[in-house]
Length: 313
Image 1 (cartoon, rainbow, N blue to C red):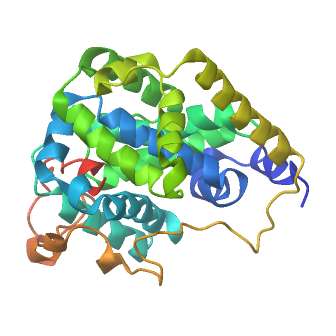
Image 2: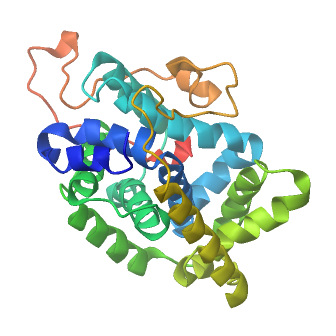
């Protein structure tokens, strides 16, 4: 397959109808590693908000089982989209996610922000370091997947375009980013997870590379000093060189999608494996557009927003 063959097909598609297919092509074929890198940076952005990081710090989930929390977040998103978000499997994944998050009371705007980072973060990373920029169809597909996820999670006021997601994301950060010791503790735990993927002698360097691609407002909120300008420039050159080399390769064939490889589950996983151990003691609740059989005759009541994705992180 030619490097741009899939892009030509995407440009002929309607994101309103085909957003899930386009999303799968982005994450499994066109930019699998870059999408994951953008999502990892999105995790770190969440910790720039003290009331989010304080909750995560209290749970100690990243200290006790950080790799599992990271893997579970990636895999739950994958499971929601794998067979279609409105398939029975996709809905089961959403109900399980809501059960995990239902333990905490979180402001709706924090839900929205965490969701926005998963839309804006990958887009910005790919445009900056990917082998090409995302097309308009791909960009809107990211937003529409994010919107449907938000609806299934019971979040209100979810944007319906990428521009609206980006505007909310940036406005929220300007208002809410601030340093707190919990920010640094949770960010440091996450950096240890990312560094642990590499051999011990290079783990410190791996952490510094991550810090070298973060912007100064985020670094300030996390309590880290910017890396030296020379290192930042070198890291950027390496990523751009990587992108140039990938651009010369053929496109990934349809029969070889790149699927998640979770370190926590070397022999595979099921939906029941995902999430903390206590999740299965909590009842499953129907999604907002589902009616419990025993209440079929009662008028539908809007459900309260469920707690955010951070707990799965």
